[in-house]
Amino acid sequence: MSQTLVTYFSASGVTANAAKILAQAAGADLYEIKPEVPYTRADLNWMEKKSRSTVEMNDPSSRPAINGKVEHMDQYQNIFIGFPIWWYREPSIIDTFLESYDFTGKRIILFATSGGSGLGKTAEGMKKLVPGAKVENGRMFNGKVSEADVKAWVQSLNL
Image (cartoon, rainbow, N blue to C red):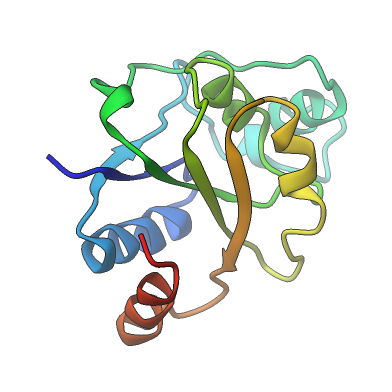
């Protein structure tokens, strides 16, 4: 078992692809954050004010339920958390995940996918949810993810 975990939420498969490449480059375990109720295409229509994702992102207290748990979370010291950027931040299901475990003393490294926006102040907001953890902005993976680039980035992190 590794001391490093790559965990991710992916609505369309883009973040999943980046997470798999990252886990391989880091020699890390891989865990997918799956919603208890999967998102449909209609749920992800950000142009519809009543779509599930829009409603969740407009409600700061929204915490979509997760299907499953990471076993032996205590063994991991370095945790990569990946997600698509929704409304300039992490999806609410990531907040559910962060509030489900004690991350005290752990290093959390963020990575995200987006059509055009960056991580912005995502780490700052997430730090409030995981007091005692070291939260770091990591990388944006937009477009094709290069295995060599990911491996070089992981090596630079000194895990």
